[in-house]
Structures are given as C-alpha cells and as structure tokens.
Length: 224
Image (cartoon, rainbow, N blue to C red; front, side):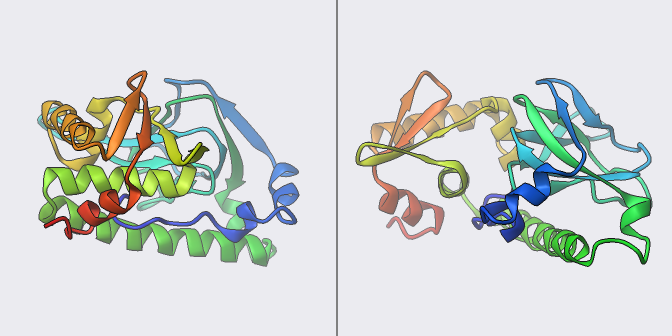
C-alpha cells in the first residue's frame, strides 16, 4: 500500500461472490515478526493478503532502512525482480496469505482470471510506486502524514459514531521510514494534527479522524 492515492483492493477480494474463491486456495499464516521472505530469496511464490498487515522493507548499504510498502488485505506481494524478491517482508500482526506458485502462474494452463487479477495488481503496484516517489520528493511532512492517514482511513477505517478511526499496527519509526522522515518529525506532526483538532489519538495506535475534509485538504496541499 502506498500513500498518495487510495489503491482499492481487487474486485475478486472485495465482492462477496468472489471471496470464497480465495478461501479455497492454499493459504499460509504467519505470526507477527516472522518473515514471509527475505530480499534475494528465489521468488518462487506470489502472495495475496487475505488478512493482517505486512511490512516490506529494504536495508541500504549504510544500514539505514526504507519501508517500501505495507501490505493490507487485497494487496499482492512478492512480485519478482530477476527471479528474486527485492525486499524483506514480515508480518506486523497475524496475517493470512493466499499462495500462488510462479511456475503454475507462468504455465499456459494457469487460471486466466487469476492471471488477470495479478496483472492488475502488478500495474497498481507500479502506479502506486511512481506516486509514492513523487510524494517523497515533493510533499511536506504534514502533507505526507495526512496522505498516509487519509489512505489508511479509506482502506481500513472503521466508523466511530460521527467519526472514523484507524488502527496503526506499525510503529512511528515504521511510518517515518515509509514517509522519508525522522521518527521525531512523525511524532511532532501527529501532535500538530492533534492540536489542530483534525485527529485524536487513543492508546497511541488508534487515530480518530475528527475533520476528514481538513485532513484531505492537507494531504492535497490545499490547506492554505
């Protein structure tokens, strides 16, 4: 999941009629902190996130970490680069993945509907990655965090009376490494949005969106 646009889950995962097709396929469950794959491993499988949240990261040569994306239900992870995974991938919460073997996908006998769904997922990933790169270079810290909260709310927000709330399974450091900020800046920006009464924070990891229109305006750079 990237943060500059709300990337909807594939229709095959969102529509009730299609969901049983996912459940009947082979699945694997991983615990928080466990890796699904590591950068450089042979990419022999592709995974659709059925439940939970994944974190995709890369470690730079100087030891710094970049969080590439977060995988939410409806997202697909594990697309190969030269036949190998190009990120580490671990679970932030208990997560269930639908497993597809690459050799079966690349066979002419594969499921055409599945091929189309994964092709659409790959195209969304490319588009989202391009938008994310633009966000990293062009948006201010408050615009980045507002974009992040806005997309998460659109994807996985839950109603709370007249408001929406979203749970953040990732740490402030994860968010910082995703948005190209320091942890201190992320914490300070959360405080800025809270003091402006655009959000409220409950138990650190639950954010309540008090003013969604104002949050969207900030995310789009229209908060003047």
